[in-house]
Amino acid sequence: MKIIRRRTECKMLQRVLNFSKLFMKNIKDHRPFSELSINGNLCPPVPLHRNLSSLAVHPKLSSTTETFDNKEHLITQDVIANVNEQIKNGTEGRLFAVVYICGKQFKVTPEDIIIIEGYWPPQNGDEIKCEKVMLIGGLDFTLVGRPILPQGLATVTATVIEKDLSHTKTIFFKRRRKQYQRINFFRSQLTMLRINEVSVSGKVNEHSNVTQYERI
Image (tube, rainbow, N blue to C red; front, side):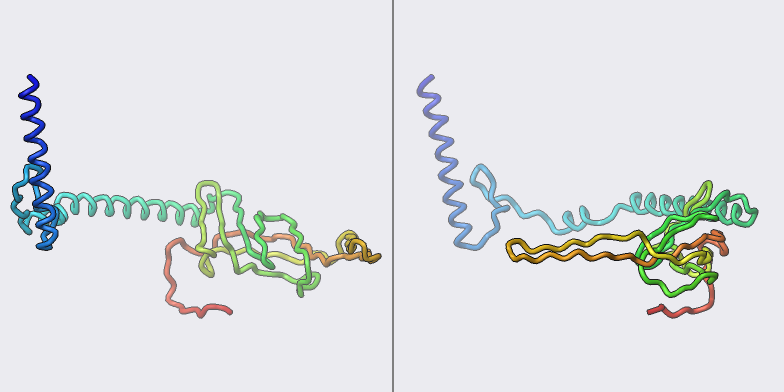
């Protein structure tokens, strides 16, 4: 048994030595490592047409992709048609919207009152149409802009009802070990808006022929 084991070990060592010799020889000859086999013999290179056939797209996969795209397109068109039908019949329910005013986002519904902090030119009684509508939704659907909805699709109007000052804010500043401290009082300007209307005034996925330039 010991003699048989030694013979097998010698054979394994011989194979390893042969493989290492062939490996060093092929490195000198700049031959790829993939052409070497474990038993020390050279493997025939794989034909090029096999690699190309493996990379080619199977016709069945392309047909299933096309059918999936067609089904998805039909579902999208069905959803858009249902939304347009609700808008036409006036069954969209109570609408809400997210508008962008003075660097902030406000979620509004009709008859809401929002407060805008800071200087803002509109005066009492001015009617405003919010053009930067980021989102509008109803009972069964929500239209999300990227980042805002197209002009003419959603309408949000508001009226300035009051301009006032906020409560007095205290600003305290001190420098340690310098015998320096200051107390300042500050009141910021406030503008109160009442939302008059939130409505969808156009059709979804309808492209107008009017070209509009981007506003600066």
